Length: 438
Image (tube, rainbow, N blue to C red; front, side, top):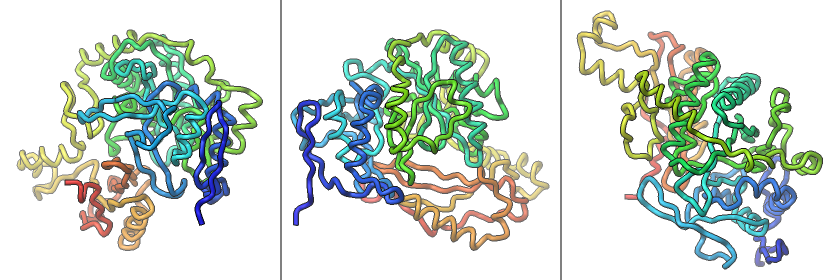
């Protein structure tokens, strides 16, 4: 029996919804058709975040509980009213990416399994000059919501000091995003440089609660992720439903709401009611374009003071002025190997280093569930060690492979007494994301 289809008439076009009854959120029971209807209800706001922008397709074809895969290239089988534009990437490759401008195109994208929307910070008519500076506040494990809010309010203050207006929204996951509309006059490298300067200034003003450190082993508090402004990086846009069990939404906020907001309050069910009551709180964003010159001046001052460029994402070529792209603990390993006498002097003559960031790897898996199972088995083997670890010592990384994500779990043993630290073991979950790709 053929799968049922739903035909929708949207914006003067016919959109076919395949498998409309497929459950996308098992905990809440919401289906694919429920998801599409949600986006149509808040289309005015959702389109403001994506309209005219190239979009990477993050597809959850098995629903929110399944693994996503990233599709940069627009499907070859598409209606003639789906717009595309050719993007080039740091790898040198190019792809025709989808550009959404109306609610029919929006529904067509969601029908592909795109639960959240991931546009680039550029417009299709100018692919070289971003018009958004994106501040992504990403807490390390164990950091509470009040601390995230405090850093967001500080970020607003810093942005204002440098002439920029920030527009906050919940990420729909664990953090807060702040968008700044900027004049499209600067390159991706310049925008990222401004974001690095901003992150460092936020850290300078609140060193105990915010960090601009890229390496997870060095982070604390709330990480200001400047690299979300590098070319080819995308962030879930406003009104995006996120693949969480309760179908949370990335919700635009007024600054007055930020101190008392709760991310769990914004869901696929509550957002339409809120949208009808307060409208789109991001409606003034496009009229608030500012200049990056003050932040770029700050970046130049930081460089003159001896600060090098911050590390770039791993899939970028090594950049001029970038420090060694290797974890600090591994740099210390190499330094001690090159200077054995110094190692002996700091280790009581044994030659064994005492690293402040002793990391071991636990699992590499195709999905987070398998990686967590590997972590559970490690905990069973090392039940005497686990109580020493803090939430921030468990480093769960979502890594981007060729077309999908995979999960790596590492443990920072800094809180474990030196004599009780387990050695690195062979991984019982050892997934190779590049196997079969040459």
